[in-house]
Length: 107
Length: 123
Image (tube, rainbow over all chains, first blue to last red; front, side, top):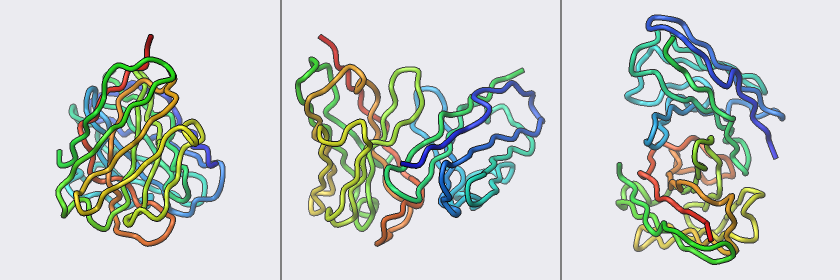
């Protein structure tokens, strides 16, 4: 099974900050990497698919990069509504494992 | 929210529970559908997927042999039969649809989710 390691597990940032979250796969997964945002009590929401493609309706302040085993989610200017938990997920082969999550909190 | 889960509840360890997920045809038809769960205060855990036509199923190691995923395409419903339940199966269970109507073994991201149904395994 492919293991997904996300870092950091949490971070504190201010509105307007640039935030970067990383995700590493234990095997090569090409660009089969997705990013989700989850707010408390809500279902996850797909932000980025295929490592770098923005899902419809997602602000352009979100971007993704990487391929192979190393991936990055960047929020270019953190907005109040962006404080949430973010997860990566590999979709290369089942089981389609998630990373452990990164909680973005207000500094 | 366009997928609707049901069937959650409180169940004793070792017992069974069946979850269901309903969706409009335009969402359900032609797409692989997944179950994802989240234990209280924990991260997301992928559980199982079934292909668009029900011919292929894959499971997480933690549930393989105990859980069975199935779908009824004419009724646009997805089920998760959960047997031999354990305390660590407690959590919110979400159904979610794959973004692409693919015919290979990859997933392409989960772009529509239900609101979740809560399962509590406790004596």
